[in-house]
Length: 220
Length: 220
DNA sequence: CCCTAATACATCTGGGAGACATATATCGCG
DNA sequence: CGCGATATATGTCTCCCAGATGTATTAGGG
Image (cartoon, rainbow over all chains, first blue to last red; front, side):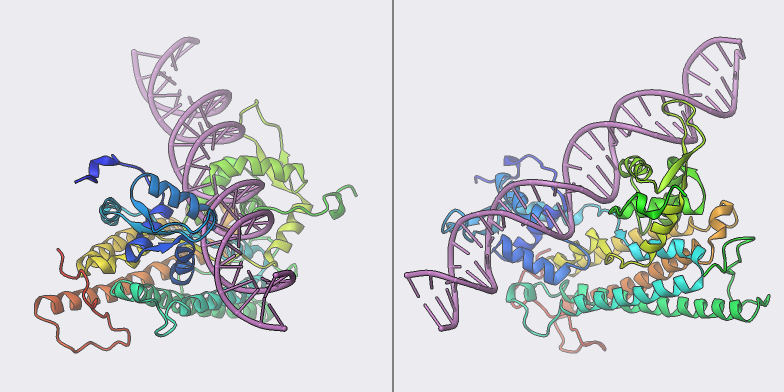
């Protein structure tokens, strides 16, 4: 047959391209539909941006991993795409390849890192903000499984997703919230210490929050 | 005096620039030292890349938020920097400003999202990989607190960090590992179901992993 | 039939990661 | 003392990516 795997020798794809291919493996759809599906289903753990999507669709088509289905009704009208045999094969081999390490960018945590210098109440304020951030995060997660309004094609893949992502998101947010509560107790303890003179005892923990030697502790 | 806050009206800084400023608020140091400190202390939750660091140092100096201390011994030799008054003020107002939402890029999770189509054992393989990823992650976290080898200046800020980051990292990895174990039990259940005919009962959970209604379940 | 909004695709700008390139300091060793 | 190897330190380049913005198309209401 025509499309042997050797037709398109081996192309390096960007992670975004693999994700696009993944969505097209669920069903044939347009770029815009991919965008919305990605936004609803996995925005929390993986972004697909406008600026990457359309060039990548073109690139994937050029390399025979996807093909247009039907005709675009106009130069700027909706165009649906479907995955090819070669695309499915590539996708499977991607699934079996090593994944990139998890990458996190957490500005609130950076602030917390430096907040020690500014005293316990700065830490407290940042923990409050973190609570807000993660309750917002949880709302995003909750939108992943809005009951039974999911399109059929995604329900077909339900063994892995989106239920799995939903469960992970829930686990993740709940666990983070618990950590914040623990840290807030620490802050309260530090504040008590500060107002009532510093006693030497410490609760049950090995990492005692040691005072700065001559530092800018009580500058607020 | 000369450096009133109005000298440098208001500049938008990149998140990386704020982090650099934060490290210089701990102590005067060179770009390379910042790089190493960031790598050791917060690589897991915030990256500072080579390509951003040196241009940003120049930018911060131009805007009077940091200044060189001493002289560079040669055109390409070590140059130490210290934070200025204006820099400290800017840093504090950054700490009080709203933080960007947490951003995560988790390729393994994307694969898991699409893995349902490929059957339970693909999910199982990906969960195994996830375990490896997070045990690696935990080793990074463990390196944050290597006993007492931390430089003094960072120990001075210990109320917030690096102990706080260490605790968060530990909490995060342990929690993720627990989730993986739970999901692996699900996979085992699905595999049992697959080999011994599908019984209708389900363990105690509300999100039952439903079979695909005519799908490519047993294609391996 | 026009106005407006939603849909859909496309482009642009700047931040960020990592590889690579270059320059300097240090150290072992004969 | 000299010389290579390694670690330190700064600088540059490329590509990926997010988000903003721009523009064309479609749908709906009056």
